[in-house]
Length: 188
Image (tube, rainbow, N blue to C red):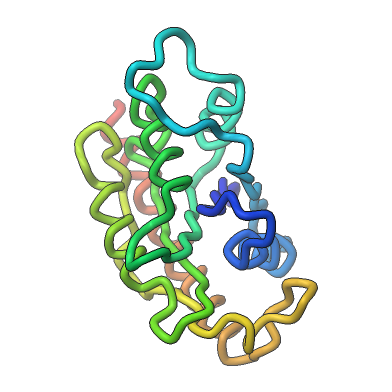
């Protein structure tokens, strides 16, 4: 399956970007995961006029070319990052690549509760009018205390965590294929 994977942080050192890069390598025999870096995305401004910036057009194309989307959301102050909110705003303003797309939210955090609150908030945002993504409601993957589960190269070192990630991905693949079939039927 071809997956567009958005790292929801614009920090130079991002555990969520590292998580997606780990997934791209770990699942390379089953999936083609395109990790999208949002560090160059300008802050959304509703008064922006004209064509979307080139970086947004590129992200729009990459999502449209994918069968599904994974968004890795860190959690800042019990919420998604401003950078992630900004990219979602861009992707629901003049372009709408997430409409009807199967999306899974995941997250990694240095804290005990992982990115659980940001994932709940992100799901609510993704189903809102103008975005209309098909958000996966199966197993939730969030890595708590990521520094104890990932080495400096971005490899997940805990076998239980890898096993649960594999379980989540298997469920998401099944869901994404079902949503893609449904979308095909609806477009006839």
